[in-house]
Length: 617
Image 1 (cartoon, rainbow, N blue to C red):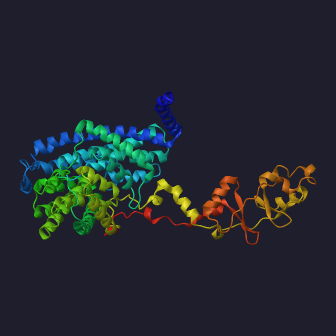
Image 2: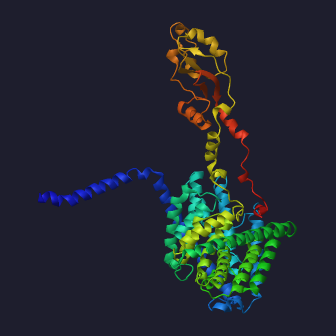
Image 3: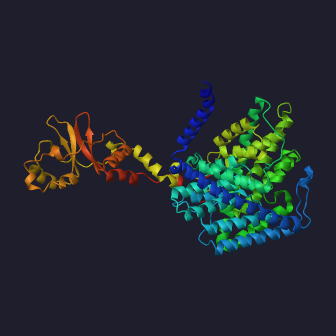
């Protein structure tokens, strides 16, 4: 008994090991392991590229804005609105030179791509929905390097657009080296974008969710979630080795104190939806109604140089708008900016970003969205506090919620920005207000879209053409398709000699076989009959029953997808359509009838993009 008791832990360990082996047996041949490995590899590449991007940006920003222009860093509350640079004229000079340099690169290196979309994220979205899921290395290099110059010189733009494009470009390069399929390339594309976002914002979960969600307005790419999670986690880990794991914003740990606050967060969603509409509409009007006509007159170089000059002038007058400007958002969340400053900075960032990105300069839209959303939310919270001080005690909470809701309203992404905002502040205490306000905001801004290449759902994407085909087939019944006339009916007892003339005079490929009672008992195919049809010695010996295969048919109420699967399973190119009520063949369904579904279905409106992007207005 004692020996048996001593063996129990050992036996338990052995059983546990056996279960683990059984669970992981075959994993080496599964797609899951392949995706995990590939996602981790692209996470390493994305993380290292994010480190290089961040280091180059900081060094150049310190040189241009810090040393040459003497731009202030926000440290003392209300001084932010009156802060000035020691050499302000350097700012428009630097942004103009940057714009001209980016225009030169666009003109000579990317002459066939005059309009690449809103920002780097939009380029990544376009690549995902493209026929091959491939990102050009030239586009990645030009837009990535251009973004460093744009932000470092003081123009209003963020880091997330270019870093998501750089991560996607690295994934596309790796997919080509490994000779992956288009589907696998698209998965890695999103994994690369997730790695860049998770690293640069130190938000691994939010980065992964945003990458797979931002490509659609009403859907998300669930197939890429596993790769995005491993890539984002790996990239984040590498980035934190160099720059630490501190969150972007250092704010008090805020939380919902009372359900009485929830109606005010719903009202915040209304304000953010209006602000997001104004942000997107202002950007599109600047891009398509101001800079696009100029480009046809003065060229891309002159247009980007002019945009850089105008953005530089705004930055010279208001240093709080330079670059990404998230440091000023932190000041707002701490309550160090007055109400007027919050409103002016939100408006100024909207204008400055429209001038920068709308003219064709490089950079992302996420950081400016956080800026405008944070300022708007804090202003709304401050206003509510002045009216209801006993209910609203922390206006900063509205600023945090405003960041997430604003970006969700502008892009249609919900879960990713919500989680990323929590990671940016290292606090999940506002999860309930975030969920409520995001839901209300998305309901109010369904027709607003910041990204040109964003599609409504998976079925509108080239990446899921096969799913669209399945849905079209499922939506059509056999009775509604064009059927060929019924072929000659064969009896089981028909001799081969009597069959020869009947078969050769018909265009049918399959012939239903019935018994004396009128029941369908088999199918005689032309390929099967051809093997014996010219054996004259068998004419009086062999009957149809002996050469027929098992009965196969579809009913009139079956859908097209069911009919296609039956064809694939049986290898038949033609199927009899049997009316089960009467037992008669009413026609023959062939592959051409199934293909006619695609010719009759008009192109999806979701794939037709508004070139001005003003449909939301």
